[in-house]
Length: 428
Image (cartoon, rainbow, N blue to C red; front, side, top):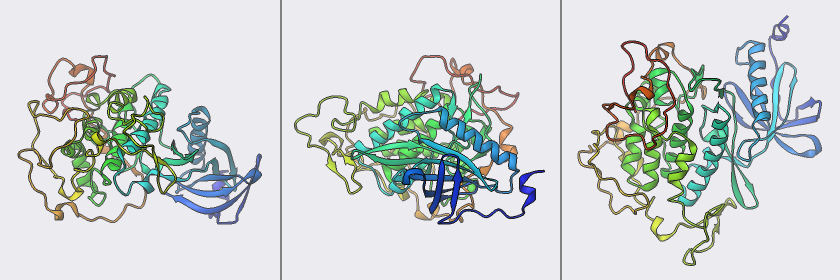
């Protein structure tokens, strides 16, 4: 008999609840995070160490379904050991509820992203994220749920260390370059998921671009209050990339390439992203690449205790001209190849928007919708029927929306899913 059929109500742990594991007892403390499919508590475990204790919520799912999800994430965390991936210490079951004990971090990136980051901090956080993504992708794993709540920050010897967590919807690629996820976070949807229902390694890089945009500007690329159908339309139309281009900053140029609508025209690996970003990195940041020039002062200590390196004079204007979120356009004409682009590393010299860019009223950016009840939503079946053209088949031709952004690398593009007859509108 299904264990869940023996009891109609399974009590969730509360503060002070003791949970027994083969490795010791855990005393549940305060609730750290909560969602539809899981809750995270602070807990004091063996040897009085603090842990982040994740409980898997049944959420009206079958017992075996929850057990398989718990087992899959436990095996992934045990298999992928990396300095920028959260560490798992224990996994157990109590009263038909499944738990994993993780290392306790100080905070999450979502809590910190309330205003623009200094360029040195943004680049260092991004470098660590790219390191973790490169490790996962080299081992054939796509995270597929990279947002501020799943990026933790802890302090080690006065320096911030990034930790990626929550591999509940991650997917292991076995002999293919794409997969169709069953659930997705509605706030970090990618163009290929919205229009064709599939996800690739480049989808992780797109979600990284959304994170970088938030760290660079202090705002989301698309207002979170936008209704779901408008949100998916703006994603399919490439609004995040257009807003990144409008920033007119060197970091914004990298973000814009990460946010291209066609996954084949984005960066093809985390290493390619860092090849461009390291050219913008001021000396004196964490893990400095070369000796610090004498005219750059030593890193200062921030209020959180992190080492925050002050940018050199040539980088002080990178974020000073970032336009307010309400001033960013909801739509703009496509810019062609002859539109001049500031060279990488050049300071921004003005605030004038590109020619033809319409003004936007604040009313259009304040379409309110109550926050969805869960962070993940099931993907409608009708959005999984259309597949884009094979990216490798488009190498010799010209895409209507991408004729001004040819691929930056000449290597072999990863093959995409097959293209049914009569479908596959090019997008980027």
